[in-house]
Length: 302
Ligand code: CDT
Image (cartoon, rainbow, N blue to C red; front, side, top):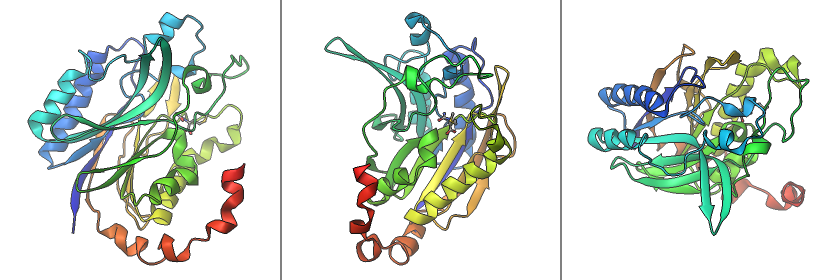
């Protein structure tokens, strides 16, 4: 067996006026709880350091950029990295990333994986950016990820925590290709943070199904690729908008083995045996023997 003790580090709402230092304090409290419970790794939500700002239309670039990190770690986030090193625990966290290279500014919805020594060992930039790019006043609230972020370029994996680890962010979890591209690289743990409003303005008929769909996609992704999946919410009533919780850890069988029960700051814990992946990767989902890529050409052509 190859055990990795994992915490899903769910956050309740983060207010617009909450400082990075206050949020990092909450993250550190969860990290200490995870460490006390013998965890190797804690997974935090998407855009964990701020409120989910794509709900607002803004055209003042300075106002928008205040939600972005120009360095990681920066002065306010350094204590989280220091605590990780002190406790010997890794973490995965999402944040809005601003980079400037040769005078070109780029903004991404990003996740990083940090090892037990506090070093960043992998970075992922969200590929599937949902929502819209222009102001749509008919909505009760906006979902402007297409305005504020550029898409990332792909799904890599990294050797870490004794296994093969990949990351995805929120809307990515709804797309089978996300898991399969990492599955083809032998992924054993997919770490996913999310912010999912209960209400979807273009399709309110889905609202009652939002927790069902959350589980449906992550359980299917886990089973169909023989991998652990860790899904972690920023949950609850944030700036007047209700977000699903439902953070959970899914085994390669597709079964949920741990789940949060509140919509606040909470950890859910699981002892994840990465060797459980083999039972699926070597049998029903032995890709080398059973996949038929010639029949899937349309998927990459369109
Ligand atoms: N953050 C994020 O990607 N949220 C979307 C909301 C639905 S699309 C408007 C999600 O897929 O959960």
